[in-house]
Image 1 (tube, rainbow, N blue to C red):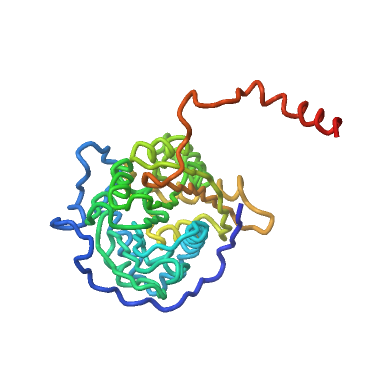
Image 2 (cartoon, one colour; image 1 turned 180 degrees about the vertical axis):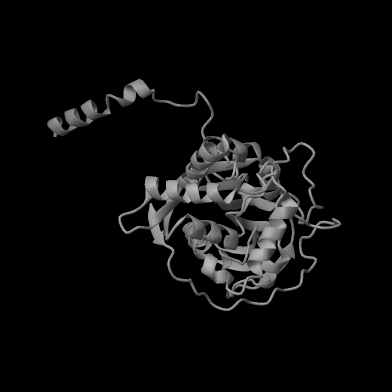
Length: 345
């Protein structure tokens, strides 16, 4: 588990200008961004996507957006490390839900030839971080990618897919635009994210108001993630979890940073407001239950990392059922056979 302390602003290089969209690999669609409040017909409409777009645009317009980038920078660098672990280069790559470009800046042009970066927030695309890789910015929704089939060698996504209403559809879209033998590497928040804040708000609201409402958005369970990737068509799956713990001066500083990240709750069933005394009680509960020795309070972010490949005939495949020539029962005798061989020598 990595521990960070949020005390001072984090400073990064100046943003690069967004490039115009060209016709490379684009499908004929009216717009890559869904209409306000729209969702796939089969999806549960859990999140207000129009509100999430406004939240991300507001965060990108702040005078010092890099002050709140520390978490997305860290996870973006870990995604880049996983890209480098794949022993090949990628002529054409796509970042789904790129924000201000937290992955591309950690990659080099020897590994990625050209990078398409998509997001629902136009202000984030206008303030893309500088990178040595040629980039193209595309305003598009994660559930409605405006690209043709078999376009990209690599698709990445960092801390964006937890806000989509139809995660299976989003994964199918990613699989669709990947070339055969292409790889998807992604990260999203897990179910234990901000459990300290969730518990504190629930206890305070129950005590002050006689019940509680959901103030932390629902997250996907890790047990479901592998199934969703396989259902979307991915093979050779890898799913692992990690935790990043950040220390804050108090609960209100944590909530300020979540707003600055564009990560405020946008669920339809969220409560419009919390009473002042309930918020103060929640901050007191947070400090009483979780305070560190130095007076700061921790916030835990659980991260799911996933890797999936699009099928190609060249990929290694498991042997057919029943083709084994040695049974598992005989494997237990290997040590005996090896010891007998040493004695005979």
